[in-house]
Structure formats: C-alpha cells, structure tokens
Length: 172
Image (cartoon, rainbow, N blue to C red):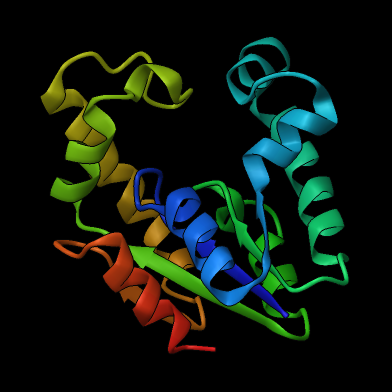
C-alpha cells in the first residue's frame, strides 16, 4: 500500500509523512529528497542550473520509481507534483494507493513559509510578506483543482501534527 500526501508547500507533507510512516510501520520517502539523491543536487540547484522543465521530467521518473516499490510506503510529494503533466492521473490509476490532500488555508501557509522562504525555489525571490502571501494565494488557487481530486482531504489548520496523523490513520 502507498499513502501519498499532497498539498501546497508548508502544508506538512514531509513532517506529517515521516511521523505517519513511523506510526503505521511503513517506509517513508520524500519525493524531493529522492530526486536530490537521483540527481546529486539540491532541488534549488536543479531549478537554477537545469530549469523547471528538467526538474519536472526528473520528478516524474522519481515518482514512477517510488510507486513501483513493493514495500508499504508513505510518500510526501512536492507541492507541484500532482499539477504537472499526467502525474495526478498516474497516481490515481495506481492500485493500493490512497492520496491524501493536506489542506491548509493561505494564512497558515504564509505563516509557515515565512521563516524558510529562501530555501524554496518558488519563493526565494519574494521578499515582502504581502508579495509572498499574494503569490501563495494565486498559486494555491491554481493548484487546488488538482489537490481537491485526492481520495481524502485532511484540514491541517489549527491542528497539532498528532491530530493530523490520527485523522490520516483513520483513512486507511
């Protein structure tokens, strides 16, 4: 079985995913970390040196490899993964996959992303809080169509990680 977490950056995919995997005795894979290992560069360097198109092709290859794993695994996607090409259709067509959207409102995302925006390629040039919040709102609106197609939606606003993990665990 594969439990796949999607959502906007800052929604908790990686931190929730790791703890969810531990509690369910599953393996854990962070797609961005997997991509970095495949390419021997950070996501930031891949974006800046090779561009987004190259990154998205590599992302698809990595996604396919992770979905072929035979072990029970929790996979934290990158924020844009389900929104590009046929990635969402590919994920939804897989047997024994549960796609969970970790849904956060704009305020929650802006607050969470404020402290580490320089390490995120899409936010690194957005210096002011207003510009960053406006970008998040626009981007989230564009991506919501894809996220909302997940098998399950779990709201993360004002919840502890433990509460989100319990809610996710009840889904499978």
